[in-house]
Length: 137
Image (cartoon, one colour):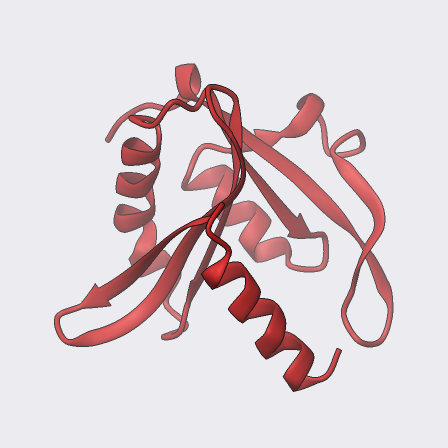
Protein backbone atom coordinates (compact mmCIF):
# COMPACT_ATOMS: atom_id res chain seq x y z
CA UNK A 1 0.00 0.00 0.00
CA UNK A 2 1.14 3.51 -0.74
CA UNK A 3 0.80 6.37 1.73
CA UNK A 4 -2.07 7.65 -0.42
CA UNK A 5 -3.81 4.25 -0.18
CA UNK A 6 -3.48 4.40 3.61
CA UNK A 7 -4.91 7.93 3.70
CA UNK A 8 -7.88 6.93 1.53
CA UNK A 9 -8.55 3.84 3.67
CA UNK A 10 -8.32 5.84 6.90
CA UNK A 11 -10.66 8.52 5.52
CA UNK A 12 -13.16 5.83 4.53
CA UNK A 13 -13.15 4.30 8.03
CA UNK A 14 -13.52 7.69 9.71
CA UNK A 15 -16.36 8.91 7.49
CA UNK A 16 -18.37 5.73 6.96
CA UNK A 17 -21.75 6.50 8.60
CA UNK A 18 -22.11 2.90 9.81
CA UNK A 19 -18.99 3.27 12.01
CA UNK A 20 -18.83 4.99 15.40
CA UNK A 21 -15.75 7.19 15.90
CA UNK A 22 -14.39 8.99 18.97
CA UNK A 23 -11.46 11.37 19.24
CA UNK A 24 -9.17 11.06 22.27
CA UNK A 25 -7.80 14.31 23.71
CA UNK A 26 -5.43 15.04 26.59
CA UNK A 27 -6.12 18.66 27.42
CA UNK A 28 -5.66 20.50 24.14
CA UNK A 29 -3.66 17.69 22.50
CA UNK A 30 -5.32 15.27 20.08
CA UNK A 31 -3.76 11.91 21.03
CA UNK A 32 -5.82 9.22 19.34
CA UNK A 33 -8.88 7.73 17.72
CA UNK A 34 -11.20 4.95 18.86
CA UNK A 35 -13.54 3.34 16.35
CA UNK A 36 -16.20 0.64 16.23
CA UNK A 37 -17.10 -0.97 12.91
CA UNK A 38 -18.85 -4.13 11.74
CA UNK A 39 -21.52 -3.27 14.28
CA UNK A 40 -24.27 -5.87 14.63
CA UNK A 41 -26.72 -4.51 17.24
CA UNK A 42 -27.25 -6.83 20.22
CA UNK A 43 -24.34 -8.97 19.05
CA UNK A 44 -20.86 -7.63 18.27
CA UNK A 45 -18.65 -4.79 17.03
CA UNK A 46 -15.03 -4.77 15.90
CA UNK A 47 -12.91 -2.36 17.94
CA UNK A 48 -10.00 -0.29 16.63
CA UNK A 49 -7.83 2.23 18.43
CA UNK A 50 -4.74 4.21 17.53
CA UNK A 51 -2.69 6.61 19.65
CA UNK A 52 -0.14 9.02 18.27
CA UNK A 53 2.13 9.48 21.29
CA UNK A 54 3.57 5.95 21.55
CA UNK A 55 2.31 5.45 25.12
CA UNK A 56 -0.20 2.60 24.97
CA UNK A 57 0.30 1.54 28.60
CA UNK A 58 -0.67 5.08 29.61
CA UNK A 59 -3.98 4.58 27.79
CA UNK A 60 -5.11 1.51 29.71
CA UNK A 61 -7.56 3.47 31.89
CA UNK A 62 -9.15 5.28 28.94
CA UNK A 63 -9.45 2.03 26.99
CA UNK A 64 -11.07 0.21 29.92
CA UNK A 65 -13.47 3.14 30.34
CA UNK A 66 -14.29 2.90 26.64
CA UNK A 67 -15.06 -0.82 27.00
CA UNK A 68 -17.31 -0.06 29.97
CA UNK A 69 -19.20 2.52 27.93
CA UNK A 70 -19.30 0.32 24.82
CA UNK A 71 -21.07 -2.33 26.85
CA UNK A 72 -23.84 0.17 27.65
CA UNK A 73 -24.64 -0.07 23.91
CA UNK A 74 -26.67 -3.05 22.79
CA UNK A 75 -23.59 -5.28 22.38
CA UNK A 76 -22.86 -8.72 23.77
CA UNK A 77 -19.20 -8.70 22.75
CA UNK A 78 -16.30 -6.69 21.35
CA UNK A 79 -13.87 -8.15 18.82
CA UNK A 80 -10.26 -7.24 18.06
CA UNK A 81 -8.24 -8.33 15.04
CA UNK A 82 -4.48 -7.87 15.47
CA UNK A 83 -1.71 -8.97 13.08
CA UNK A 84 0.28 -11.78 14.75
CA UNK A 85 3.54 -9.88 14.25
CA UNK A 86 2.34 -7.20 16.68
CA UNK A 87 2.78 -9.50 19.68
CA UNK A 88 3.04 -6.64 22.20
CA UNK A 89 -0.44 -5.39 21.25
CA UNK A 90 -1.90 -8.89 21.49
CA UNK A 91 -0.33 -9.27 24.93
CA UNK A 92 -1.63 -5.84 26.01
CA UNK A 93 -5.17 -6.64 24.87
CA UNK A 94 -5.12 -9.94 26.74
CA UNK A 95 -3.30 -8.95 29.95
CA UNK A 96 -4.50 -5.38 30.44
CA UNK A 97 -7.91 -5.28 28.75
CA UNK A 98 -9.19 -8.82 29.42
CA UNK A 99 -9.55 -10.07 25.84
CA UNK A 100 -9.20 -13.78 25.11
CA UNK A 101 -8.48 -15.73 21.94
CA UNK A 102 -11.55 -16.43 19.84
CA UNK A 103 -12.40 -20.08 20.30
CA UNK A 104 -10.27 -20.30 23.43
CA UNK A 105 -6.78 -20.90 22.07
CA UNK A 106 -4.13 -19.20 19.98
CA UNK A 107 -4.08 -21.84 17.25
CA UNK A 108 -7.81 -21.64 16.50
CA UNK A 109 -7.96 -17.86 16.76
CA UNK A 110 -6.25 -16.91 13.54
CA UNK A 111 -7.18 -15.80 10.05
CA UNK A 112 -4.34 -17.10 7.93
CA UNK A 113 -2.36 -14.85 5.58
CA UNK A 114 -4.73 -11.92 6.05
CA UNK A 115 -2.31 -9.07 6.82
CA UNK A 116 0.42 -7.91 4.43
CA UNK A 117 3.04 -5.67 6.07
CA UNK A 118 4.63 -4.60 2.79
CA UNK A 119 7.16 -7.43 2.84
CA UNK A 120 5.38 -10.62 3.88
CA UNK A 121 2.00 -12.05 4.84
CA UNK A 122 1.03 -12.60 8.48
CA UNK A 123 -1.93 -14.25 10.16
CA UNK A 124 -4.40 -12.05 12.00
CA UNK A 125 -5.20 -13.03 15.58
CA UNK A 126 -8.87 -12.88 16.56
CA UNK A 127 -9.65 -11.82 20.12
CA UNK A 128 -12.93 -11.18 21.87
CA UNK A 129 -14.35 -9.87 25.13
CA UNK A 130 -17.84 -10.83 26.26
CA UNK A 131 -19.94 -8.38 28.25
CA UNK A 132 -20.39 -11.04 30.96
CA UNK A 133 -16.59 -11.41 31.29
CA UNK A 134 -15.80 -7.71 31.57
CA UNK A 135 -14.84 -6.78 35.11
CA UNK A 136 -15.67 -3.10 35.35
CA UNK A 137 -12.72 -1.25 36.94
